[in-house]
Image (spheres, rainbow, N blue to C red):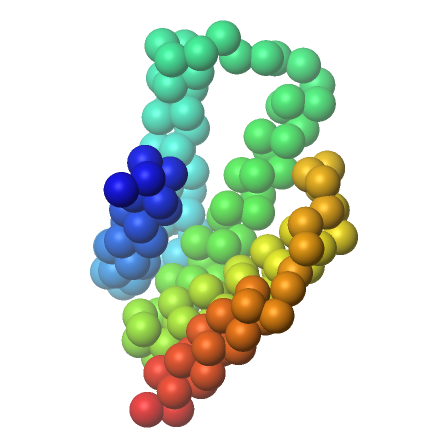
Length: 141
């Protein structure tokens, strides 16, 4: 199996597990505390990886990207954990996956954020449509 595909599949499993852990975690301290502790754990892990695995680039641009990613990550965490606790994990993740695929196709097609624009052919559109149909079925079931 392709290592990149394996990592992507493992990331999907990790996201589902993370949502469950976070949904359980917000019951007592609340979403703000869970987001804060999660951000701290992410920061410690990221700094450890940067120190031991690579040579970090500490420019203003790199720090801005890192801070922006952290703010977006906090929003994502709260925006997934809150509905998952109310409507269920499968429904929440089906909507997250569908919206990520739509955004991914738009970013690929327009070349937004720097990568070269990629073709979005009929097979990709069909694949997206099938995922959306599956998401609707999960949400309505």
